[in-house]
Length: 145
Image 1 (cartoon, rainbow, N blue to C red):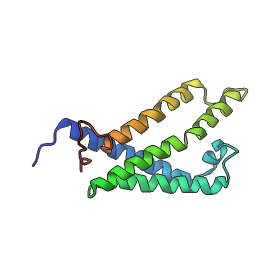
Image 2: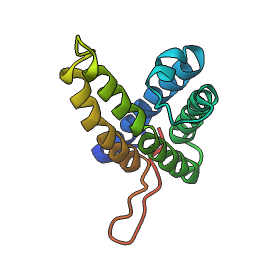
Image 3: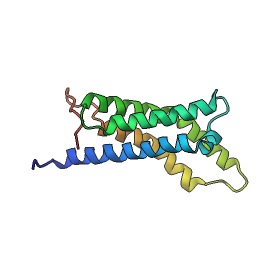
């Protein structure tokens, strides 16, 4: 059996964990859209369709990132999920503002501040795990499980 170096193993595990998180979120967007609708900013048109499409995007991105057959598809999955996380950030900000405006403070700063920090970290980890970042003029293929 071939030994896998620790960095490669870490990328594999990170890819699979991120893919699992996005897959679960995608299923939740489709199966139980109300919590997502409630935090979607009012200026978003066709909110129900947008929430459903984001669930589908999460599922497709998760499959693309996790699959071991095509490094190129995994990179596209990483780009797509990173872009998705950036695009839904306004909903997270809206949720934060709505909660903090509540008399009881909603979920509070202990929930929202880590979430605000975690979003850019998730983008960076997704790009790293999908081998999107180019270092020293070369790009590695994403590790396969």
